[in-house]
Length: 376
Length: 248
Ligand SMILES: Nc1ncnc2c1ncn2[C@@H]1O[C@H](COP(=O)(O)OP(=O)(O)O)[C@@H](O)[C@H]1O
Ligand SMILES: [Mg+2]
Image 1 (tube, chains in turn brown, yellow):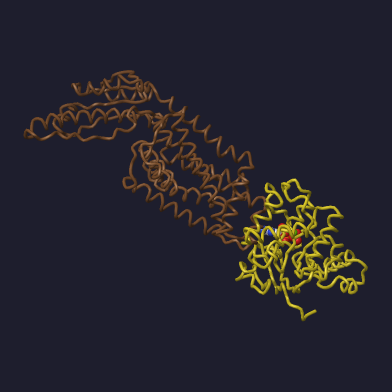
Image 2 (cartoon, chains in turn brown, yellow):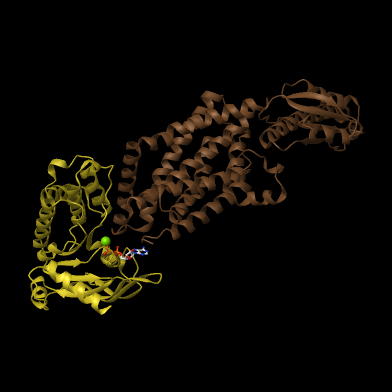
C-alpha cells in the first residue's frame, strides 16, 4: 500500500506544479462547457416546418396548433402531397415535415394507436435530433393530455358511484424542452472522458518519454502498485472535475439533476474503468506524450460520434447503430441524460450500466496485463 | 581472487534486436566489493548488457545471475538487491532533490524514519546538503548525477549498476564522481560501472572491454597493459581495436 500512496502524492505535486496541466484540468473544461453549452442551446430555434394534414379533424388541428404556437418551429408551408414534401426538404425550404394521415382523429377516438409521420432532414444531425426531441415532446404531451381526458370521461361514465378516479401522476421531464437539459449532461460525459483517458495516458507515457519509468521498473514496485499509483490520481481528479462541472451546470445553465448524486457518482466510477483502462492501453502503444494525445483524441472523437452526443443513435444507419454497442460512452451518455432529466433508478438503468461495466472491466484487465514492467 | 564471492555472473549472455545482435555471448564474473568497469565505444552494447542484468530487458539467450538470483526467473528478487543509475538522467525534474529521495524511499518501502535518516546520510555522502531543497531541473548535471547515485544507494543495495555516470560533465566533476565511486566501494558494495572514457579504466579493479557486442579483453588494468605492452589503457584500447579490425 505504501508505495501507492507515495506515487499518488508525487503525481499531485507534479500536477499542481505544471501550469498546462492545471489549465487542462480546471480551465479548459469550463471554456468547453460554456462554448458547447451556449452554442448548441441557442442554435436550435425556428426549425422550418412543413405540414401535411390528410386528416383535417379537430384533433389534427389541435396538434398542428401546438406546433404553430412555439418559437421552436416556424411553419413555412402546407402541403397536400408526399411529392411536395420531398421537394421542399430537398430544396432546403424545410428541415422537418409532419404528416398526419387520414382518419387519424377517428382512429384515436376508437382507441387504436394511429401514427404520425415526422420527417427530419438529417444533414445537420444535432439540429435534427433536438428538433425531433421537441416534436416528440409536443406529441407526447398531447397524447398524455388526451388520454387523461378520455380516462376521466370513461371513469365518470363507467365506474360505480363512490369510486375515486385515480389519475396516474407522471413525472414530466424536460418540460419546457430546454436543449441545454439534453446537451449539458452530454458535455459532462465528454469532459469526464477526456480528463480520465487523455491525462492518464499522457502521464504514463511521460514517464516513459523522460526516462523515469526505467528508474521505476528497476525498483521492487509491483505492477499493480505502479498502475494503481498512476491511475488513482486521475480517478480523484476526474471526480473533482465532475463536481466542478456539475456545479457550473447548475450555476450557469440553471440545470438541476433530477436523480441522485450518489447514483451518478457510482455509475461514473464504473464508467472510469473503461476510460482509465483505455488510457493505460494507449500508453502501452505510444512513446511520446504527443503520440498519446493524438491517439487519445482519435479514440475520444470516435467515442463521441458513436455515443449519440451530436447525432442521436436512432438517426444513424443500421450498421453504425450496432457499432455503438461496443462504445462504453454510449451507455454512460444515456445514463447521464436519464439521471439528469428523469432521475432514473439503478434498476431502470441496468441494461446500460451492466454492459458498460462489463466493457470497462474487460478493457481495464486487458490493458493492465498488456502494461509490462519491462522496457520493450 | 577466485575465493571471493561472486556478485554478478553471466554465461554466453546474448541480446538480439531483430536480426541485429547487440550483446553477443558475453561471459563474465564480478566479485563482491569490486569496482568493475565496462568499457566500450558508443553502441558497443554496454547499456543493453546492464539492462538485461537489471531486469529491464529479457535476454535472448544465455545465463545470468545477479546477487545469486537468476535473471530469467527472479528479476523481481534481483531488484531488491541492486541500485541502478541510468545513462540518461531519470529522476523527476519537477520535484526537489529531497522530494526525489523521499519518493524513492517510499517506493522501496522504507518507513518514514528510515527515509529521513537515509536522506541525511546520503546527502552527506554525495555532498548535496546545500541543494536539498532545490528543484532538480535547476541543478547542474554533475549534481544531478550525484543525486541519481544517492537514489541508487537509498535502500542500501549490495550491488550498484552505474551506466555512464560521468558522461557529459567536466573533468573535475568526473574526478569527484570517481571519488564517490571509491567511497561507495569502501562501504563493501559491488560497483558495476560503464564508461566510454578509456582513462577511467585506470580507476577500476578490473575491466571488460566490449566491441560490437563482444568482450574482447577482460582483466585488471595493470595486467592488460602488461599483456599488450602499452603504458596507458587508452593505448591498450587502440591496440585491441586494431587487432579486431585485422581479424574482420
Ligand atoms: N531497443 C533496441 N532496439 C534495437 N536496437 C537497439 C535497441 N537498444 C539498443 N540497440 C542497438 O544496440 C546497440 C548497442 O546499444 P547500447 O547497448 O545502447 O550501446 P552502448 O550503451 O554501449 O552505447 C546499438 O547499435 C543500438 O542501436
Ligand atoms: Mg549506453
